[in-house]
Amino acid sequence: MSYNFYMPMLSFIGEGSLKDSIIEVKKRKFRKALIVTDKMLVKAKLVDMLTDELNTNGIKYHIYDKTNPNPTITNVNDGIEIFKKEDCDFIISFGGGSPHDCAKGIALILANGGEIKDYEGLDKSEKPQIPLVAINTTAGTASEITRFSIITDEERQIKMAIVDKHVTPIIAVNDPKLMAGMPKALTAATGMDALTHAIEAYVSTVANPITDACAEKAIVLIRDNLKNAVDNGSDLEARGNMAFAEYLAGMAFNNASLGYVHAMAHQLGGFYNLPHGVCNALLLPHVQEYNIKAAAPRLKKVAEFMGADVSKMSDQKGAEKAVELIRKLSQDVGIPKSLEELDVKKEDFTILAENALKDVCGFTNPIQATKEEIIEIFQKAY
Image (cartoon, rainbow, N blue to C red; front, side, top):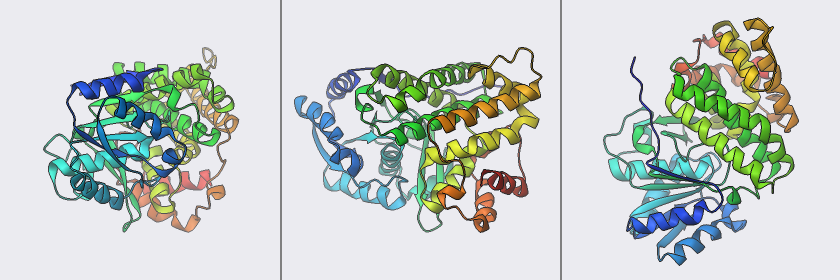
């Protein structure tokens, strides 16, 4: 079996990487950027850190700050019109997964035409997107390095998974200074999102030694740094280690894909407009509990990566330990305990399950489920 491995052409990681990345942008002779971000980041003056560097380097820009927490088709279409109107020639996404995913949708359509829903699924485009520089302010989604873009179709109330090699940014930036002001709840949710990426990639049916190495190191870094990043947000060492963790987890799932946690979380996000990281964190132990019958040896290793001594445990007991440790970390960082707390309705489980089984992320889960089994997982998470 042969494997593909997708990565940005260039990544900047660590304190001061924002400044270095804009110097690199200047070298590439780009003229004017459409900055895709959100109002919260503008209000917090984090975007000023970017625009100051652009001004220093003589690069023009226009800010589009209306990206929703779950970016929509409308966001993509609005961004396309503004890019054309402002005569931009490249895009900078600034924020977490929401601005990155929105920017990817804009850049893909500008290069390929049509509508974003035309590209739902795997590798539907023919041309590389408009050049995109993705600057991260969270340590979770890894959208700054991946070929995944998740866009909400408001009409169908679903999240579309667009998995396409042409949406990989040309430059990815992870500067922990941009993450220092992240609120505790967002730090927790994005950190658990990164853990979900690592674990789902590790138990994926197309995992390989490269993705395994990335996933293992990501889990260890999250184990050792997430709680400290949540409790002490100004700790740049913890922030920096979480940036490496989410990047490594992104490398893992960008190439080994994901599983039912994401397939199910996408439906909760699209249907109820819930935070993606929280949905992942809440579903992660329940899905892995279901996966034990197909992936017990791998989940036993996950328990080891999370700090347990599993040397004298059976595969079954080791896998159960992994689920226990996932639950404990989630509780320690303050993730809600049930779907009921998020006002999810039981009567929606059938349609949520039907849509989850169509999500491309679920195709590499270690065992394929029936609709009834997905409904049962939702019920256990309730």
